[in-house]
Every structure is written in structure tokens, then in C-alpha cells.
Image (cartoon, rainbow, N blue to C red; front, side):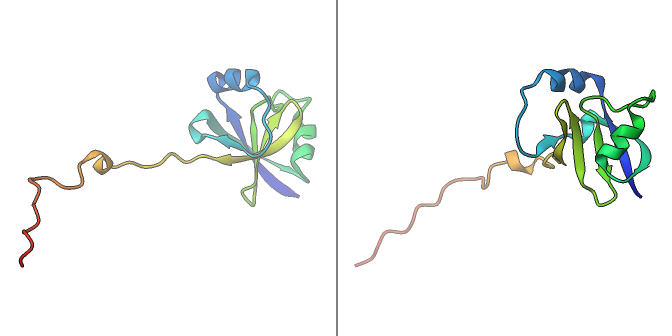
Length: 112
């Protein structure tokens, strides 16, 4: 059996997620919208869902399962769909500074 880490979607993003239109393809998700939870053993994503569905820890729409190999699946109304983390671009502030400062240099006139 494999182990799967559950990432529970926070309540605010969950409300937005529930009312968003369904899209095809891998869903881009932000780590800040999730809280890492317990690890569950199972044969696959749907096996984990089946184990938890009658318990107080049942998966809710928007929750995420991560396999040992790092594969992510998000639980939607239609089942599990592929997802991937979106890591924000790190900025150090230098992007906003001008490339060069000072006066411009005019080229020397051509000689004959």
C-alpha cells in the first residue's frame, strides 16, 4: 500500500473554489490555500476517498491528496483531477531599479 498526505483547503479559498466553473487540465494551486494534514495508507486516490467518506475526516471538495511520488490530485465534484503547486516568483527588489544611471554619452563625431 502507498501512503497519501492530505492537504485540507482553507475555508475562504474553498468557498471560491466551490463556485468556480469547472476547468479541464491540471489545476494550478497555491500552497498558502492549504493546511497539511495527516497521512493515510491506501491502494490509490479513490481507495483513500472510500476509506474516509463515512468518517468525520471525510475529504471535502477542494481537498488535495499527495502521493509518495509527489503526484497531486484535487477532489472535485466530478472526482479527482490532476493539480500542481504554483510557487510564487521570488523578488528581491532589484527588478524595479533602473538598469543604468547618470548622463548619456554621445558618440564622437566621425573623422574624415
